[in-house]
Image: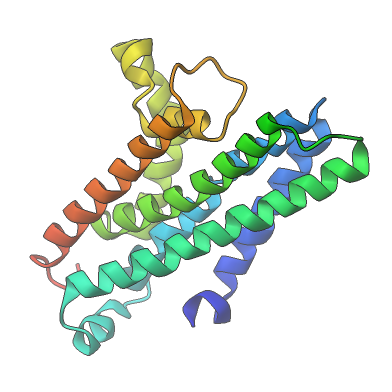
Length: 219
């Protein structure tokens, strides 16, 4: 109900489509254009963070935990629902990207384009799940979103330079680019990238549940 009756998810969905449309419009071929669906995964990531951290921000988390005292069940429910929302973001983005591409240029649905679409949709899905874990561990919504975006925009690049190319491919954003079939030189298959991101989502969720059950509902 929160996803469909509050403005934030719809605003994030609209912002994601703007990124996709602008990216597709500036691309010189269909694959590069559709790949922007994967780059828009930052929006379901933020949605996942808001799923939990937003409860702390608006101080509704106490009522949530009083209604369902088993906090692990609450986190699991949010994980399932927002992972589904991430899938929705990816599917809508893919439809918008393909529609925009068709309006701007002729293209064929090649195997590479199909891999890009599927990978980008999966990237959106898993990043939403990762966002739930991040939001549950960093309860301050602004801090959690800022930390996540800073990691994507800056920190991972610095870490990649420090650890080297071979190790950097296992970092979340780099694995995401491999999953989304972006035209970057990342030595990681889409299947391996999906496994890496899923592992991050599982690890963050486990840590989130472990820390949430030991903390007070409000800071």
